[in-house]
Image (cartoon, rainbow, N blue to C red; front, top):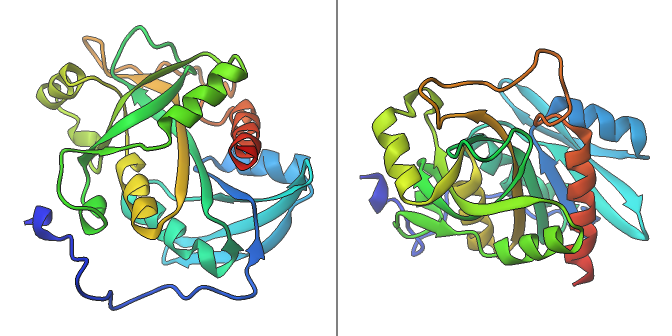
Amino acid sequence: MITDSYDEKSPAKINVEANENAVRADAVILTFSHLIEAYVLQNYDCEKLGELNMAHGSTSLYSFRHGGKTFGFGRTWVGAPAAVGVVEELPWLLNTKKIIQFGGAGCLDREIVRGKIMVPTEAYRDEGTSYHYAPPSDYVRIKNADQVAAFMKERRIPFVPGKTWTTDAFYRETLRNFEKRKADGCISVEMEGSAIQAVCDFRGWEVYMFFSGGDLLDAPEWTDRRVEGEIRNSQHDPRLFEIALSLAEYVTNH
């Protein structure tokens, strides 16, 4: 059973070695959007540190200076195993303990408009990766949710706090499972949150995450709520990176 997979008593067969020459960063900002990656490279003086590789290709990690601090930046892959793989391999290129993670998520509440910021407080573990990093439970607590919420309030950024549903199978978000998760208090659905929190808890790293509201499940029929070619209020909106950068400054100053 997957719920029996957590093993803290024996060593892993494969480990990422910390690189003594890794660039020290106050925090690293990770997202999924290739368009936001392009925006950052065009608007910030980024230094490429190296690449993380998988069979389907590579993703680059960068560093840049801002406000007297050094920040890392990178684009990760979609899905819990791939996203956790990127997080695990960060120490080879970056020496940091703080991770800002943001991306798009589906909405389980029709009152949450497209593009609204959602701050997860707990993540339902409907994926397999987290069970290798934390003892079995229905939810993993997003332990820095209060800090992210405090930041949003201080900067007067409208947001909605609530539980999130992390799933491996977005084509199996069935009506019954949707109703159970919504009744349990979940306002969003995505594919990485619970696993990212679990690996960071296991490794002793701090993660600060938020989502941007996207497609809507809380309707008679699923709706994308997207206008073709529109970037504003989508998961590719560059304003999300600016929020993430401000959050990175906030958590490194507190």
